Length: 203
Image (cartoon, rainbow, N blue to C red; front, side, top):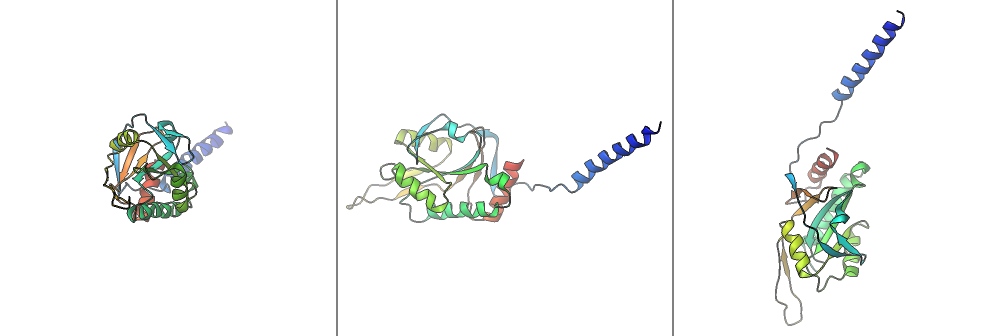
């Protein structure tokens, strides 16, 4: 009979611990800038060439979260700005390694004629040494751009062979299953983007 009070005390401690834990549990705010896709959007199998010269396929998305941006290395403004903004997001999440260690960033170049894998790798690692890059032939780029709802248009070259490329500026978040989970129209507001990512990845 003497064991009964001990059992009761143990149960009370368990219950109290449960409620205390939930009481102080940090609420995750809903995303503000991210448009979360329900259900996540499928990506068709594809084959690109990574910045390391190896094949980059749908399997490379598996097992991690990936921010995907379409652009090109000769881009004069929006591409370097966006990659810098994403780097600031990582800095905001520096105290949450459980998030940053699971998060990659990939630049897919829509200008394969000028963006060789080596050039791409040098370009993206200027912003962060863990950034990834990939490109491919027009057919492969067109397919994956369509799946990501990304737009691009290569203009005719001038007399010096230079040409601009119009492209969308969205940043997509791919989940560890290789599906598009969310879309960011703008990543300039790094504090809010970091908060949105932490909420989505940590949920």
